[in-house]
Amino acid sequence: MNKTGTNKNQWLSILGVAMALGTAWAVRGQFGHEQGAAWAAAIGALALVVFSGRKDWYTIVLPVTLASAVGWGMGGMISYGAIVGYGRADDFLNAGYGLLMLFVIGGLYGLIGGGLTALTLESSEKKKVQWARVMTEMVAGGLIVYGFLVMQLEILMTPPRSEAWAFCLGAGLALLWYLARNNFSSSLRVAFITMLGAGFGFAFGNFLQITGNILKINFNMWNVMEYSIGFFGGLSLAYSIFTSVWPEKAIAPKPWENRIAILISLVIIPLIVFMESLSYETLLKRLQNIGGSEEIVLLSSIVSGLLICSVFLINWVKFEKVSFNSGKSQVTFLFISLFSAYVAVSFIVTGIFFGKVLSNHILYLVNIFIVLLLLRKSESPFFDKPETGVSRRFLILLPLVIAVILLLGLILVNIHGEISGANHRFTLN
Image 1: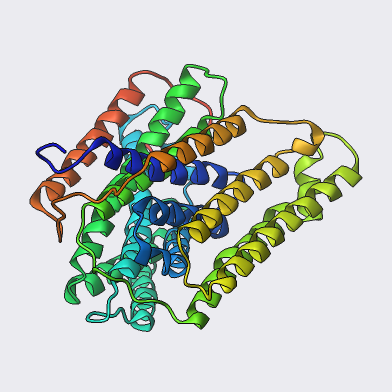
Image 2 (image 1 turned 135 degrees about the vertical axis):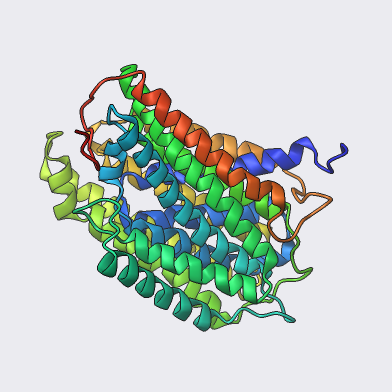
Protein backbone atom coordinates (compact mmCIF):
# COMPACT_ATOMS: atom_id res chain seq x y z
CA MET A 1 0.00 0.00 0.00
CA ASN A 2 1.39 3.39 -0.95
CA LYS A 3 0.79 6.86 0.46
CA THR A 4 -2.38 7.36 -1.55
CA GLY A 5 -3.98 4.30 -0.03
CA THR A 6 -4.11 2.42 -3.32
CA ASN A 7 -2.47 -0.65 -4.73
CA LYS A 8 -2.06 -2.30 -8.10
CA ASN A 9 -5.01 -4.65 -7.63
CA GLN A 10 -7.39 -1.74 -7.13
CA TRP A 11 -6.45 -0.31 -10.51
CA LEU A 12 -6.71 -3.76 -12.07
CA SER A 13 -10.32 -3.93 -10.84
CA ILE A 14 -11.05 -0.50 -12.30
CA LEU A 15 -9.47 -1.63 -15.57
CA GLY A 16 -11.66 -4.75 -15.55
CA VAL A 17 -14.87 -2.71 -15.26
CA ALA A 18 -13.65 -0.30 -17.96
CA MET A 19 -12.88 -3.13 -20.38
CA ALA A 20 -16.21 -4.83 -19.69
CA LEU A 21 -18.26 -1.71 -20.40
CA GLY A 22 -15.99 -0.76 -23.29
CA THR A 23 -16.44 -4.14 -24.95
CA ALA A 24 -20.19 -4.18 -24.32
CA TRP A 25 -20.52 -0.67 -25.74
CA ALA A 26 -18.58 -1.71 -28.83
CA VAL A 27 -20.97 -4.63 -29.24
CA ARG A 28 -23.80 -2.15 -28.82
CA GLY A 29 -22.75 -0.70 -32.16
CA GLN A 30 -24.36 -3.70 -33.87
CA PHE A 31 -27.73 -2.89 -32.32
CA GLY A 32 -27.84 0.80 -31.38
CA HIS A 33 -30.61 2.83 -29.81
CA GLU A 34 -31.85 2.61 -26.23
CA GLN A 35 -32.09 -1.17 -26.04
CA GLY A 36 -28.52 -1.75 -27.19
CA ALA A 37 -27.20 0.80 -24.71
CA ALA A 38 -29.30 -0.69 -21.91
CA TRP A 39 -27.94 -4.22 -22.46
CA ALA A 40 -24.37 -2.89 -22.53
CA ALA A 41 -24.98 -0.85 -19.37
CA ALA A 42 -26.39 -3.91 -17.59
CA ILE A 43 -23.11 -5.70 -18.29
CA GLY A 44 -21.15 -2.72 -16.97
CA ALA A 45 -23.15 -2.69 -13.73
CA LEU A 46 -22.65 -6.42 -13.25
CA ALA A 47 -18.92 -6.01 -13.75
CA LEU A 48 -18.91 -3.25 -11.14
CA VAL A 49 -20.69 -5.39 -8.55
CA VAL A 50 -18.59 -8.47 -9.27
CA PHE A 51 -15.30 -6.59 -9.01
CA SER A 52 -16.48 -4.78 -5.86
CA GLY A 53 -16.47 -7.98 -3.85
CA ARG A 54 -19.08 -6.56 -1.46
CA LYS A 55 -21.42 -9.30 -0.27
CA ASP A 56 -24.26 -6.87 0.48
CA TRP A 57 -24.02 -5.52 -3.07
CA TYR A 58 -24.51 -9.03 -4.41
CA THR A 59 -28.00 -9.00 -2.89
CA ILE A 60 -28.93 -5.77 -4.71
CA VAL A 61 -27.28 -6.67 -8.00
CA LEU A 62 -30.55 -6.85 -9.94
CA PRO A 63 -31.83 -3.36 -9.00
CA VAL A 64 -28.33 -1.98 -9.66
CA THR A 65 -28.32 -3.65 -13.07
CA LEU A 66 -31.76 -2.23 -13.89
CA ALA A 67 -30.82 1.29 -12.74
CA SER A 68 -27.70 1.21 -14.90
CA ALA A 69 -29.64 -0.09 -17.90
CA VAL A 70 -32.29 2.63 -17.55
CA GLY A 71 -29.76 5.42 -16.97
CA TRP A 72 -27.29 4.66 -19.75
CA GLY A 73 -30.09 3.42 -22.00
CA MET A 74 -31.88 6.76 -21.78
CA GLY A 75 -28.99 8.37 -23.63
CA GLY A 76 -29.59 5.98 -26.51
CA MET A 77 -32.41 8.22 -27.74
CA ILE A 78 -29.88 10.93 -28.67
CA SER A 79 -29.00 11.22 -32.36
CA TYR A 80 -25.28 11.70 -32.94
CA GLY A 81 -24.60 10.42 -36.48
CA ALA A 82 -24.50 13.91 -37.99
CA ILE A 83 -22.42 15.22 -35.08
CA VAL A 84 -19.74 12.62 -35.76
CA GLY A 85 -19.65 14.09 -39.26
CA TYR A 86 -19.06 17.60 -37.88
CA GLY A 87 -15.80 16.36 -36.42
CA ARG A 88 -14.69 15.36 -39.92
CA ALA A 89 -14.97 18.91 -41.26
CA ASP A 90 -11.80 20.71 -42.38
CA ASP A 91 -12.45 23.91 -40.41
CA PHE A 92 -11.97 24.35 -36.67
CA LEU A 93 -15.40 25.86 -36.02
CA ASN A 94 -17.28 22.76 -37.20
CA ALA A 95 -14.71 20.21 -36.05
CA GLY A 96 -14.41 21.74 -32.59
CA TYR A 97 -18.19 22.01 -32.34
CA GLY A 98 -18.59 18.36 -33.30
CA LEU A 99 -16.13 17.12 -30.66
CA LEU A 100 -17.62 19.36 -27.98
CA MET A 101 -21.15 18.15 -28.73
CA LEU A 102 -19.96 14.55 -28.50
CA PHE A 103 -18.53 15.49 -25.10
CA VAL A 104 -21.98 16.79 -24.13
CA ILE A 105 -23.75 13.66 -25.39
CA GLY A 106 -21.27 11.27 -23.79
CA GLY A 107 -21.46 13.34 -20.64
CA LEU A 108 -25.24 12.91 -20.52
CA TYR A 109 -24.81 9.15 -20.85
CA GLY A 110 -22.39 9.15 -17.93
CA LEU A 111 -24.26 11.64 -15.78
CA ILE A 112 -27.59 9.81 -15.85
CA GLY A 113 -26.15 6.30 -16.06
CA GLY A 114 -23.57 6.84 -13.34
CA GLY A 115 -25.96 8.85 -11.16
CA LEU A 116 -28.75 6.26 -11.15
CA THR A 117 -26.32 3.38 -10.63
CA ALA A 118 -24.73 5.11 -7.66
CA LEU A 119 -28.08 6.16 -6.22
CA THR A 120 -29.08 2.50 -6.00
CA LEU A 121 -25.90 1.81 -4.02
CA GLU A 122 -26.34 4.79 -1.69
CA SER A 123 -29.92 4.02 -0.67
CA SER A 124 -30.05 2.91 2.97
CA GLU A 125 -32.47 2.40 5.84
CA LYS A 126 -31.65 5.87 7.14
CA LYS A 127 -31.86 7.54 3.76
CA LYS A 128 -34.05 5.74 1.24
CA VAL A 129 -34.35 6.82 -2.35
CA GLN A 130 -37.85 7.89 -3.40
CA TRP A 131 -37.71 6.31 -6.83
CA ALA A 132 -41.15 7.47 -7.94
CA ARG A 133 -40.18 11.06 -7.20
CA VAL A 134 -36.80 10.66 -8.94
CA MET A 135 -38.39 9.35 -12.14
CA THR A 136 -41.19 11.92 -12.06
CA GLU A 137 -38.78 14.80 -11.60
CA MET A 138 -36.49 13.53 -14.35
CA VAL A 139 -39.36 13.24 -16.84
CA ALA A 140 -40.68 16.67 -15.86
CA GLY A 141 -37.20 18.17 -16.08
CA GLY A 142 -36.68 16.59 -19.49
CA LEU A 143 -39.93 17.97 -20.87
CA ILE A 144 -39.38 21.45 -19.44
CA VAL A 145 -35.82 21.81 -20.74
CA TYR A 146 -36.73 20.35 -24.14
CA GLY A 147 -39.68 22.69 -24.45
CA PHE A 148 -37.66 25.72 -23.39
CA LEU A 149 -34.43 25.12 -25.35
CA VAL A 150 -35.77 23.45 -28.49
CA MET A 151 -39.37 24.61 -28.84
CA GLN A 152 -39.00 28.15 -27.52
CA LEU A 153 -35.40 29.23 -28.03
CA GLU A 154 -34.85 26.90 -31.01
CA ILE A 155 -31.37 25.92 -29.81
CA LEU A 156 -30.66 22.97 -32.07
CA MET A 157 -27.64 20.70 -31.81
CA THR A 158 -28.04 18.67 -34.98
CA PRO A 159 -30.84 19.86 -37.26
CA PRO A 160 -32.88 18.40 -38.86
CA ARG A 161 -32.36 15.30 -36.71
CA SER A 162 -33.87 14.56 -33.31
CA GLU A 163 -32.99 16.97 -30.51
CA ALA A 164 -33.58 14.42 -27.75
CA TRP A 165 -30.33 15.55 -26.14
CA ALA A 166 -32.31 18.41 -24.62
CA PHE A 167 -34.70 15.99 -22.93
CA CYS A 168 -31.75 14.03 -21.51
CA LEU A 169 -30.14 17.29 -20.37
CA GLY A 170 -33.28 18.23 -18.46
CA ALA A 171 -33.53 14.75 -16.94
CA GLY A 172 -29.87 14.89 -15.93
CA LEU A 173 -30.22 18.31 -14.33
CA ALA A 174 -33.30 17.13 -12.41
CA LEU A 175 -31.33 14.10 -11.19
CA LEU A 176 -28.47 16.35 -10.02
CA TRP A 177 -30.95 18.58 -8.18
CA TYR A 178 -32.48 15.57 -6.44
CA LEU A 179 -29.04 14.28 -5.41
CA ALA A 180 -27.90 17.68 -4.14
CA ARG A 181 -30.95 18.64 -2.10
CA ASN A 182 -31.28 15.16 -0.54
CA ASN A 183 -27.57 14.97 0.31
CA PHE A 184 -26.72 11.95 -1.80
CA SER A 185 -23.19 13.29 -2.00
CA SER A 186 -21.49 10.10 -3.17
CA SER A 187 -23.97 9.67 -6.01
CA LEU A 188 -23.45 13.31 -6.97
CA ARG A 189 -19.72 12.67 -7.08
CA VAL A 190 -20.13 9.57 -9.23
CA ALA A 191 -22.50 11.35 -11.62
CA PHE A 192 -20.06 14.23 -12.14
CA ILE A 193 -16.92 12.11 -12.58
CA THR A 194 -18.65 9.61 -14.87
CA MET A 195 -19.98 12.54 -16.90
CA LEU A 196 -16.41 13.75 -17.43
CA GLY A 197 -15.12 10.29 -18.31
CA ALA A 198 -17.86 9.28 -20.74
CA GLY A 199 -17.91 12.73 -22.34
CA PHE A 200 -14.16 12.69 -22.91
CA GLY A 201 -14.36 9.10 -24.14
CA PHE A 202 -16.88 9.97 -26.84
CA ALA A 203 -14.97 13.01 -28.10
CA PHE A 204 -11.61 11.22 -27.94
CA GLY A 205 -13.15 8.22 -29.69
CA ASN A 206 -14.22 10.45 -32.57
CA PHE A 207 -10.66 11.77 -32.75
CA LEU A 208 -9.32 8.20 -32.92
CA GLN A 209 -11.90 7.26 -35.54
CA ILE A 210 -11.03 10.13 -37.85
CA THR A 211 -7.29 9.64 -37.35
CA GLY A 212 -7.63 5.96 -38.19
CA ASN A 213 -9.56 6.80 -41.35
CA ILE A 214 -6.93 9.33 -42.39
CA LEU A 215 -4.18 6.75 -41.86
CA LYS A 216 -6.31 4.20 -43.75
CA ILE A 217 -6.12 1.67 -40.94
CA ASN A 218 -7.95 -1.46 -42.05
CA PHE A 219 -10.24 -1.72 -39.05
CA ASN A 220 -13.74 -0.73 -37.97
CA MET A 221 -12.81 2.69 -36.60
CA TRP A 222 -16.43 3.47 -35.75
CA ASN A 223 -16.23 0.58 -33.32
CA VAL A 224 -13.08 2.13 -31.84
CA MET A 225 -15.09 5.26 -31.07
CA GLU A 226 -17.80 3.18 -29.40
CA TYR A 227 -15.25 1.27 -27.36
CA SER A 228 -13.71 4.56 -26.25
CA ILE A 229 -16.88 5.97 -24.68
CA GLY A 230 -17.57 2.66 -22.93
CA PHE A 231 -14.00 2.28 -21.70
CA PHE A 232 -13.60 5.80 -20.32
CA GLY A 233 -17.17 5.77 -19.03
CA GLY A 234 -16.52 2.49 -17.21
CA LEU A 235 -13.13 3.69 -15.98
CA SER A 236 -14.56 6.87 -14.46
CA LEU A 237 -17.60 5.03 -13.07
CA ALA A 238 -15.48 2.38 -11.35
CA TYR A 239 -12.93 4.89 -10.06
CA SER A 240 -15.58 7.22 -8.64
CA ILE A 241 -17.46 4.39 -6.94
CA PHE A 242 -14.39 2.70 -5.49
CA THR A 243 -13.19 6.04 -4.07
CA SER A 244 -16.51 7.17 -2.58
CA VAL A 245 -18.25 6.54 0.75
CA TRP A 246 -21.16 4.08 0.79
CA PRO A 247 -23.56 2.79 3.46
CA GLU A 248 -22.12 -0.11 5.40
CA LYS A 249 -25.03 -2.35 4.44
CA ALA A 250 -27.31 -2.15 1.42
CA ILE A 251 -31.08 -2.58 1.76
CA ALA A 252 -32.16 -6.03 0.59
CA PRO A 253 -34.76 -5.62 -2.20
CA LYS A 254 -38.17 -7.21 -1.85
CA PRO A 255 -38.79 -10.33 -3.96
CA TRP A 256 -41.15 -8.50 -6.34
CA GLU A 257 -38.52 -5.80 -6.89
CA ASN A 258 -35.95 -8.42 -7.83
CA ARG A 259 -38.38 -10.19 -10.15
CA ILE A 260 -39.28 -6.98 -11.96
CA ALA A 261 -35.59 -6.08 -12.28
CA ILE A 262 -34.63 -9.44 -13.72
CA LEU A 263 -37.62 -9.47 -16.11
CA ILE A 264 -36.75 -6.05 -17.52
CA SER A 265 -32.98 -6.62 -17.63
CA LEU A 266 -32.97 -10.19 -18.95
CA VAL A 267 -36.25 -10.41 -20.88
CA ILE A 268 -37.66 -7.09 -22.05
CA ILE A 269 -34.39 -5.42 -23.06
CA PRO A 270 -32.97 -8.48 -24.90
CA LEU A 271 -36.40 -9.11 -26.46
CA ILE A 272 -36.44 -5.60 -27.93
CA VAL A 273 -32.92 -6.17 -29.24
CA PHE A 274 -34.14 -9.42 -30.81
CA MET A 275 -37.16 -7.83 -32.47
CA GLU A 276 -35.18 -4.87 -33.79
CA SER A 277 -32.04 -6.69 -34.95
CA LEU A 278 -32.35 -10.48 -34.77
CA SER A 279 -35.81 -11.36 -36.07
CA TYR A 280 -35.95 -13.33 -39.32
CA GLU A 281 -37.15 -10.41 -41.44
CA THR A 282 -34.54 -8.03 -40.03
CA LEU A 283 -31.69 -10.50 -40.41
CA LEU A 284 -32.77 -11.32 -43.95
CA LYS A 285 -32.46 -7.67 -44.95
CA ARG A 286 -29.20 -7.25 -43.08
CA LEU A 287 -27.45 -10.39 -44.32
CA GLN A 288 -28.72 -10.54 -47.87
CA ASN A 289 -25.58 -8.86 -49.16
CA ILE A 290 -23.47 -11.72 -47.77
CA GLY A 291 -25.31 -14.33 -49.81
CA GLY A 292 -26.53 -17.70 -48.61
CA SER A 293 -29.77 -19.49 -48.02
CA GLU A 294 -32.79 -18.20 -46.18
CA GLU A 295 -32.61 -21.34 -44.07
CA ILE A 296 -29.34 -20.13 -42.55
CA VAL A 297 -30.91 -16.76 -41.81
CA LEU A 298 -33.77 -18.54 -40.06
CA LEU A 299 -31.26 -20.66 -38.13
CA SER A 300 -29.41 -17.50 -37.06
CA SER A 301 -32.64 -15.98 -35.77
CA ILE A 302 -33.69 -19.13 -33.92
CA VAL A 303 -30.29 -19.63 -32.28
CA SER A 304 -30.16 -16.02 -31.07
CA GLY A 305 -33.68 -16.32 -29.66
CA LEU A 306 -32.85 -19.58 -27.87
CA LEU A 307 -29.67 -18.04 -26.48
CA ILE A 308 -31.54 -15.08 -25.03
CA CYS A 309 -34.21 -17.34 -23.51
CA SER A 310 -31.58 -19.68 -22.06
CA VAL A 311 -29.72 -16.87 -20.31
CA PHE A 312 -32.93 -15.67 -18.71
CA LEU A 313 -34.25 -19.10 -17.66
CA ILE A 314 -30.97 -20.36 -16.22
CA ASN A 315 -30.37 -17.20 -14.21
CA TRP A 316 -34.01 -17.04 -13.08
CA VAL A 317 -33.71 -20.57 -11.68
CA LYS A 318 -30.38 -19.79 -9.99
CA PHE A 319 -31.73 -16.67 -8.30
CA GLU A 320 -35.05 -18.23 -7.31
CA LYS A 321 -33.17 -21.18 -5.82
CA VAL A 322 -31.55 -18.87 -3.27
CA SER A 323 -34.68 -16.71 -2.89
CA PHE A 324 -32.79 -13.86 -4.58
CA ASN A 325 -30.36 -13.75 -1.66
CA SER A 326 -27.61 -13.96 -4.22
CA GLY A 327 -23.92 -14.47 -3.57
CA LYS A 328 -20.77 -14.22 -5.60
CA SER A 329 -21.40 -17.38 -7.65
CA GLN A 330 -24.85 -16.28 -8.86
CA VAL A 331 -23.68 -12.75 -9.68
CA THR A 332 -20.54 -13.93 -11.45
CA PHE A 333 -22.52 -16.41 -13.54
CA LEU A 334 -25.07 -13.73 -14.46
CA PHE A 335 -22.26 -11.38 -15.50
CA ILE A 336 -20.46 -13.96 -17.63
CA SER A 337 -23.61 -15.36 -19.24
CA LEU A 338 -25.14 -11.95 -20.12
CA PHE A 339 -21.78 -10.66 -21.38
CA SER A 340 -21.13 -13.78 -23.46
CA ALA A 341 -24.67 -13.78 -24.88
CA TYR A 342 -24.30 -10.15 -26.00
CA VAL A 343 -21.07 -10.93 -27.81
CA ALA A 344 -22.56 -14.13 -29.27
CA VAL A 345 -25.59 -12.39 -30.79
CA SER A 346 -23.20 -9.80 -32.22
CA PHE A 347 -21.38 -12.63 -34.01
CA ILE A 348 -24.74 -13.90 -35.26
CA VAL A 349 -26.02 -10.55 -36.52
CA THR A 350 -22.84 -10.01 -38.52
CA GLY A 351 -23.08 -13.40 -40.24
CA ILE A 352 -21.07 -16.03 -38.39
CA PHE A 353 -23.34 -18.79 -39.75
CA PHE A 354 -22.38 -17.60 -43.22
CA GLY A 355 -18.72 -18.02 -42.31
CA LYS A 356 -18.13 -14.29 -41.79
CA VAL A 357 -16.13 -13.27 -38.71
CA LEU A 358 -15.06 -9.65 -38.29
CA SER A 359 -11.69 -8.74 -36.79
CA ASN A 360 -13.21 -6.50 -34.13
CA HIS A 361 -15.29 -9.45 -32.93
CA ILE A 362 -12.15 -11.46 -32.28
CA LEU A 363 -11.02 -8.60 -30.05
CA TYR A 364 -14.31 -8.86 -28.16
CA LEU A 365 -13.30 -12.40 -27.18
CA VAL A 366 -9.83 -11.23 -26.20
CA ASN A 367 -11.37 -8.54 -24.00
CA ILE A 368 -13.67 -11.04 -22.29
CA PHE A 369 -10.68 -13.28 -21.57
CA ILE A 370 -8.70 -10.38 -20.08
CA VAL A 371 -11.66 -9.23 -17.96
CA LEU A 372 -12.08 -12.73 -16.52
CA LEU A 373 -8.33 -12.91 -15.87
CA LEU A 374 -8.47 -9.58 -14.03
CA LEU A 375 -11.46 -10.84 -12.05
CA ARG A 376 -9.44 -13.79 -10.81
CA LYS A 377 -6.71 -11.44 -9.60
CA SER A 378 -9.04 -8.84 -8.10
CA GLU A 379 -9.16 -8.05 -4.40
CA SER A 380 -11.04 -5.35 -2.52
CA PRO A 381 -10.90 -2.38 -4.92
CA PHE A 382 -12.07 0.26 -2.45
CA PHE A 383 -9.58 2.99 -1.59
CA ASP A 384 -8.53 3.59 2.01
CA LYS A 385 -9.43 7.29 1.93
CA PRO A 386 -12.85 7.56 0.26
CA GLU A 387 -14.39 10.93 -0.52
CA THR A 388 -17.85 12.45 -0.65
CA GLY A 389 -19.08 15.23 -2.87
CA VAL A 390 -17.27 16.79 -5.81
CA SER A 391 -13.85 18.08 -4.77
CA ARG A 392 -12.27 21.18 -6.26
CA ARG A 393 -9.76 19.20 -8.31
CA PHE A 394 -12.55 17.51 -10.26
CA LEU A 395 -14.25 20.85 -10.88
CA ILE A 396 -10.96 22.09 -12.34
CA LEU A 397 -10.90 19.03 -14.60
CA LEU A 398 -13.98 20.22 -16.48
CA PRO A 399 -12.36 23.21 -18.24
CA LEU A 400 -9.18 21.19 -18.71
CA VAL A 401 -11.06 18.41 -20.48
CA ILE A 402 -12.83 20.94 -22.69
CA ALA A 403 -9.48 22.51 -23.54
CA VAL A 404 -8.02 19.12 -24.46
CA ILE A 405 -11.02 18.36 -26.68
CA LEU A 406 -10.63 21.68 -28.50
CA LEU A 407 -6.94 20.89 -28.95
CA LEU A 408 -7.88 17.54 -30.52
CA GLY A 409 -10.18 19.41 -32.90
CA LEU A 410 -7.35 21.77 -33.83
CA ILE A 411 -5.06 18.82 -34.50
CA LEU A 412 -7.65 17.18 -36.74
CA VAL A 413 -8.18 20.14 -39.03
CA ASN A 414 -4.43 20.42 -39.51
CA ILE A 415 -3.85 16.80 -40.55
CA HIS A 416 -6.55 16.44 -43.21
CA GLY A 417 -8.55 18.28 -45.80
CA GLU A 418 -12.21 17.64 -46.56
CA ILE A 419 -12.92 13.93 -46.08
CA SER A 420 -15.90 11.73 -46.81
CA GLY A 421 -18.72 11.81 -44.30
CA ALA A 422 -18.02 15.40 -43.26
CA ASN A 423 -20.97 17.54 -42.15
CA HIS A 424 -21.17 21.26 -41.54
CA ARG A 425 -23.30 22.78 -38.80
CA PHE A 426 -22.04 26.25 -39.66
CA THR A 427 -21.33 27.68 -43.09
CA LEU A 428 -18.21 29.84 -43.37
CA ASN A 429 -18.24 32.69 -45.88
